[in-house]
Image (tube, rainbow, N blue to C red):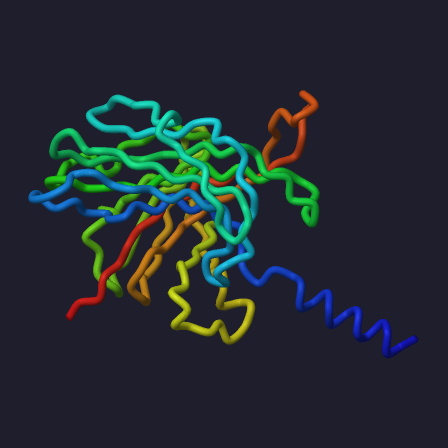
Length: 251
């Protein structure tokens, strides 16, 4: 019996997630060149980036669009479903009409996490530059949002990325920010603590993180809240505000 209990305990530990849930919103490029095709592809996947999975089914996004010149354009009609590891995800393509900074944003459908017994709603954005615009810190107005204090593109590894966590448009003191890297399979995580990095904002909601490796990095500021569940009743939820940035090695 003791052996059985021990074996079950080891199984549960093996099944416990080492990394956090992250809503990916990854463009085909973060800087669009002046010459050639001015369109950008976007991949929307709900997963565990460092571990490369498991992937979770996404529901139909509540909102998906782009902010430029202070105006929002609804891009939900551009979404196409796709399968990632047998789970539902989405993709889209958008042609940038003129030089500017483009803030792509996503309000996903609430995801029920049975292990934590609450919904997950991670409002996500990424900035794509075309012609070095000046509006890379523009806000989309999500309930939870990270406003970059460091330009979120053209970043070298070892750069210090800074941002301010906003809840309902106001700085959130001492906010918790989870950080993950999209693993290109080149790194084996030595222990669970290395999978999801965690930093806390200061009294003004400001945080900083030095980027140690090239690739895509996600920063997700999280708080507890309430949403209207599928049955119309108030339900517990983890509300997140995520921003993605890309770093490149200085060679």
